[in-house]
Length: 251
Image (cartoon, helix red, strand yellow):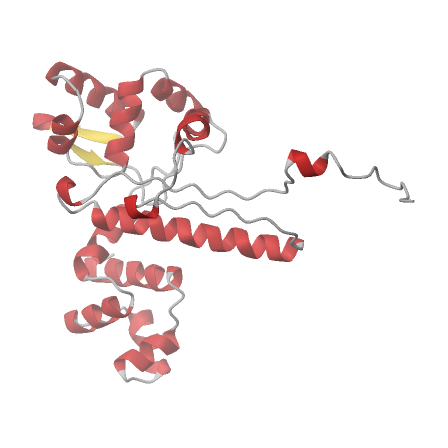
């Protein structure tokens, strides 16, 4: 497949993610919807047209090229054994997480206490685990896809979950410091619950996209940010302990 065809296919995926229809593209380009569909089906785009449609999706050609490259990667999840090896060595897990988040090697060694001999050894292990391809001079090629996820309830998931529970909420959540906590409780139908979960997934995707975009900036212009989204059937214990048993009548 030609690079132009790959770019157009990547653009189609991006438009679907952002809920942009052919009709939206047609209106933006001042064309008929039939012409737009034909352009996509034949993958016939001029450079200026690609730029126009990217702009509609709030992206640019550089971002599209990055997405195309990442889309060719095949690692979306590690094996259970690989995750166990990561959590058995905190520096190995740190290196993996930083590289998955697209950190540059210079930024990693300048920010964290990795000795030169450690870096070589850790990168060799990550190469063996399939997370990166180790190149000469300790340069790396990331092999994980944009949609990479840790195994749900797997070793790494549980490791981070433990630290979220004990550390993340140990905070006063001051909005002026870039912090925010919103707590809400109520009663929902199953349909409304599903709707809220889908909204949370969209927000998580937006956070991920912003992280990848801002990851191109110097570290001095960004700071580590954590986002926790959670939802479950739940009632505070101080309320629940006063619930009547089913089938009991009040006087």
